[in-house]
Image (tube, rainbow, N blue to C red; front, side, top):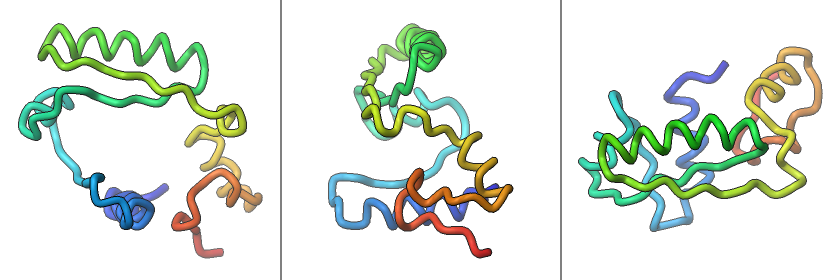
Amino acid sequence: MFSLEERLHFLKETFKDEPKIKVTTYKGLTVNFCKEQNAEYLLRGLRNAQDLEFEKAIGQTNYKMSGIDTLFFITSSGKSHISSTVVRDVIRNKGNYEFMVPDVVRVAP
């Protein structure tokens, strides 16, 4: 639904006042990118138990490949139902999606 350039713009706008946050893209394995950036940890968000199982497997694989640890954050209860699939479906069907995305993410009618 959104191109890489659009998503990059959304993130840069969202975090423009956060000097400690750098928004960039990469190709290839995440752990290789982390090593290039001298990152020691990956931060991942979890909405539910299914996310935990999926992300746990990825985190364990990343650790075995690179020694980079993954830290998990649990979403606030008011946001746990939001997924990109739900947001895309609401947008496609011309529903009100604004409460589910940052202010910078808006789709022309």
